[in-house]
Image (tube, rainbow, N blue to C red; front, side, top):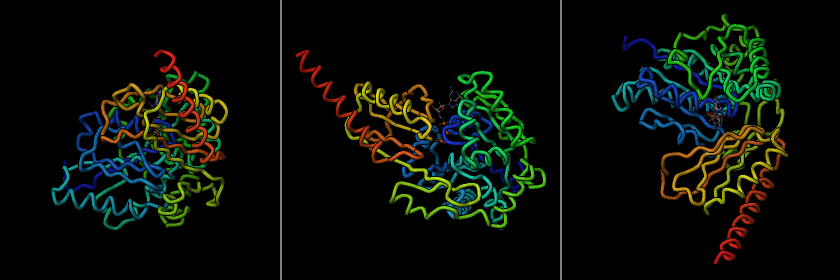
Length: 366
Ligand SMILES: Nc1nc2c(ncn2[C@@H]2O[C@H](COP(=O)(O)OP(=O)(O)OP(=O)(O)O)[C@@H](O)[C@H]2O)c(=O)[nH]1
């Protein structure tokens, strides 16, 4: 490999819960990506993805509490510059590629522009292929309701239709057609559990605006000239209030997306939690953009991870071990049009009720 050649920077984007981390886990397990540096950006005060990507070496950078497309753009620039400097000094493994996983709410154009515009970065790095994941089950909602989801698709070189194992054929075809209409240039492939070949991130990527659709060109041009920056409030404000404004198509506030983070010190009673969750998604699935939970479940020695996207609840997974002694449960909700305070109250009441039922059962057996 030519050590002086610019390093490709791949962007893995896609709407909330569409399978970006799953893809990343799969890709990073391949020997071809043994020397990749990874930058994970999560929306919400506390992220979980870094626990799910089994690769936390010195060349993994985590960026939380904000979106690299807006509030954290300067952090992204600094993060990439630092990563490169540490590589040059031999402080991190000599990576040959950078993979950025954006938040599910990110507009990839400013992320691409950060690399392409920065005088120092563009000397050492170049935009490689941009891959977008699209959840075949939830595509009508994400692509229909959210401009950011459409932008992610429009700017991608490759689009992976995910969850095709649980979507029916009609849903897959509809998702494919929707994606093709938004981006006639992209290669569209179906995947299951991120099982894409190592070539998924290969290729130069058509960062050249001329190779993209007219609309994508407009977005990228705007980002390159700096107009698409800073459309949300500052990151500390997001962290303090635990909510963020979601940016609309024309840069105005379209609706409010709120993040709720709940921590639970006591182990969770699984039946009560499961019942609460099913009732919640049945009633408010359209308002639950994303749910991620790392749970200390009563009777389970290892953490249980639960993922939800709208009304779709994925089967719970067991992680191999706890990373810290605290064993606190951590739940992150990204909701729209739902009160975080009410959500938290109903969860805590349900869990309390579950604990009482359990106590009564135990007392009855004694
Ligand atoms: N059945 C099925 N489930 C999938 C597939 N891809 C991802 N999932 C599940 O979808 C859920 C969300 O996947 P993630 O990879 O965390 O999605 P993400 O895009 O990284 O989510 P955010 O970072 O929150 O935006 C997890 O439970 C995955 O196991 C797939 O192809 N089939």
